[in-house]
Image 1 (cartoon, rainbow, N blue to C red):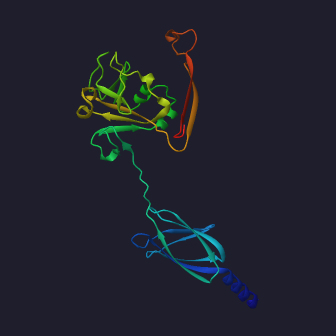
Image 2 (cartoon, helix red, strand yellow):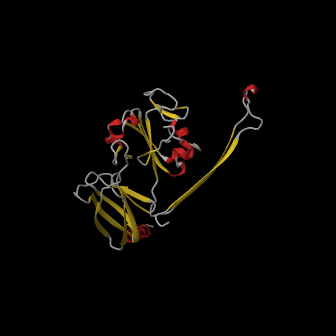
Image 3 (cartoon, rainbow, N blue to C red):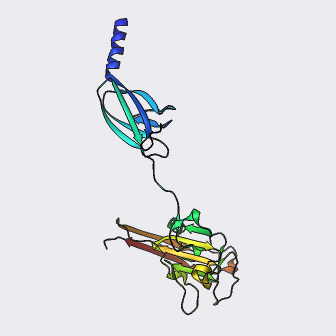
Amino acid sequence: MSALALGSVGMTAAQESLIIGHVRDHIHGDPLSAATIQWRDQGTFTDNQGAFRTLVKKGPQELTISYVGYETLTLPLDVYEDTVRLTIGLKPSTSLLREVTVTTGKYEQPIGETTATIEILKPGLLEQTNTTSIDEVLGKVPGVAIIDGQANIRGGSGFSYGAGSRVLVLVDDIPAYQADAGFPNWDDFPLENMAQMEIVKGASSALYGSSALNGIINLRTAYAKETPVTKASVFYGATLNPRNIERKWWDKAPSGIWVEFVGRSAHW
C-alpha cells in the first residue's frame, strides 16, 4: 500500500508545475499587493511584496491577472518545466468617468470644474419616460417649472405671457426662440436625436446676453459616428375616465400613438 501511495504522489508531482511570479507596476516597477491571478476555475493572489506561488497542470495554460486601477492582462503559457518564474507588469488604467458640459463656458469642460449650478440630462431619461416634448422632461428637473409653455428657473424672473421668462433656450448653442412671440415652441426640438440636455440654473448674461438672466437650457443633438446607429420606438398613451364624472369633458377618451425614428452614420 505504501509503494502505491508513493507512486501516486510522484505521478501527481510530475503532472504539475510550480509557478513563482511577481506582479509589478509596468511604469514604476512598484509591487502590487493583493493582485488576483486566475486560471480555469482556480486562483490565488499576491502578498505584500507582489509575489505569488501556485501549482498548475503542465501544458497550455492561460493566466488572467487583474488589479484595481490597472488594465487586466491575459497571459498565455506553455507550461512543461517543473518550475516557471514570471515577472508580470500591469499598465495603469486610463479610463475617465466624468460628464462634460459646454454651456457654462462655451467650450468643453468637466462638470466638476464649472462654477455655475448645472444639471445634465441624458437621453436615457427621455426614452424611459416616453416623452413626446422637451418641456415634459424639464418639469422633472428640481428648480425648473414650465408655466404656460415658458421655462422658469428657481422663480427668478416672474412670468408675463409674451414677454419671455429670461431663460435662454439653445439648440447646439444657437438660440431657438420663435421670431414673432419670443418664446420657444417645444414641439420643434429634435427629441429623438438628443445627446444631452444642459440646464444652467442662474444668470449667465455675461456670455449670452440679457435673454439668459434667469438661466440657460441647451439642447445638444447627437453627431454621426463611424459606427451607424439606428433607433426606433413606438409608444401609446390614453386618458382614463376621472372618478368625478362631471370632470369628463370628452365624448371619446383622448389617446395617441407616437413613433420616433433616428438613423446616424458618418457614411450616409
